[in-house]
Length: 299
Image (cartoon, rainbow, N blue to C red; front, top):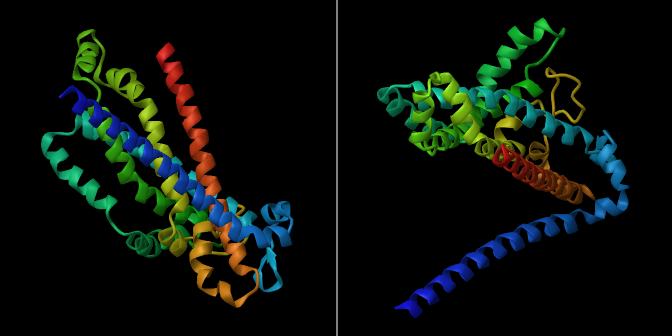
């Protein structure tokens, strides 16, 4: 029996190692595949020009990716700035303040919102958010705006990732032992002090991880953003300017790439850039998360 258990343990360990190696190799294969497809445009144009130029004229062979890179970063970061505080507050309410009836009602609603197709969010953004910005919000700050803006894309993205953040955070809060919160309350701490000093403190690294996951989804979101951002290849100067994120560029133009020389390679370079942005961001976040965990362990 001991030999059988040993064999099972070894098999399980090697199987898990094999899956991990396969996942890493698959990621490397994707990166190299995109890179090799992008090599022609990199050879034809200087890499620095591709990254720093704002001229996007495919018919003339000009492929400047700076507007698309900045648009992707602006929309995604603003979306997470909007979504994170709301998600934390809603999660705290559902975990610590809501009645059982409210929890039974809202938790399936959150799961349902997570499963709504992006195109539905895009249509909602076109019908509700775009007119709101063009008619009510933008006139207070600028002379004219169509409503198809960085802010519209960020709001739609924020609404899309809020259910994901809430689902993860509620489970994080539930994983904290009840003895810890009860001990805090027994020592005289208020409910809010217990939430701040025990629940949020113990969940901080998990909240950062959830934020990274949500931001990675925001970087790659295509359809909803494509429908509300305006898709103009110019560097956005304010929240009320149109933008053109990398996923929207790829989705909008992939069918046309065979009609122009170098266009396929340029779009593969766009996909490679998006891949690198997500991978590098996740690596930096993982390193930062480890540093935060070490600091909290020391304190």
